[in-house]
Image (cartoon, rainbow, N blue to C red; front, side, top):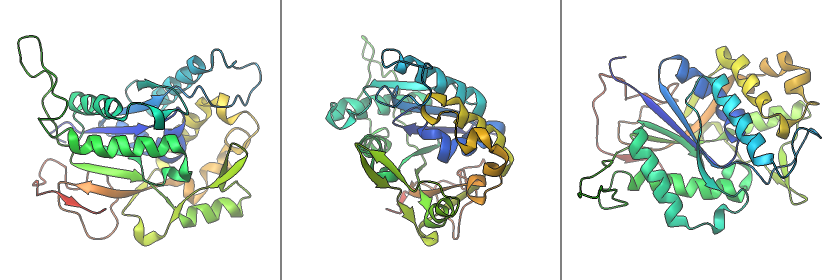
Length: 287
């Protein structure tokens, strides 16, 4: 490719990237794309699945180390942390949070962004907050009147940047049905209540990325998050069986915003329309 391509993923906690995007991040890094990951928190409100691996006093440090391990496994850049407190994203200063993301977008200058959809995968309030921040930042990063960063002499430090494509991580209903067939949980327990994963019909999924060749990196990235997943699970005990599942070998997205022509049918490349010879068109929105 004759131009440098950059991908930016924005999530809430360490391990948010692992299950649904780990293969995608690995695939594009292996192709020579510069891949960045932003995480809003260090996951300090998470549980500790392996006694003795962490304490609540050092859990943020342990989970940061685990995320750095995962990023190395995917072959991407070291993670960026926004520095917010796990479980408190809805009560943070929302404008400041968006401003931090805008400045990162302008500094990293990606063509493609990935984040949560409005469902937050299973309705997690931190996920939904990050969805809103990232979606708004996508728009505002291109606006020179929003969050201007200037030096003492009045020079613009980081110029506005228009991200070409914004994708929402989405799970198709077929994948959730497969989990059920394998006896896997189709909900996440939060405060003693099961929050079910949100599944989309096939015709709502715009983009399917084949990550079969990256399955080993993906499962190793998941296993980096040991304090969260523990040692007694299929990712550790039966990795070959997990990697053979169709749902593990593909990752699915919904194209939410685009400045380039939206192709007919299902995309198989997040950078469709953005390779060197592709003309840029006016913004189209699929929301």
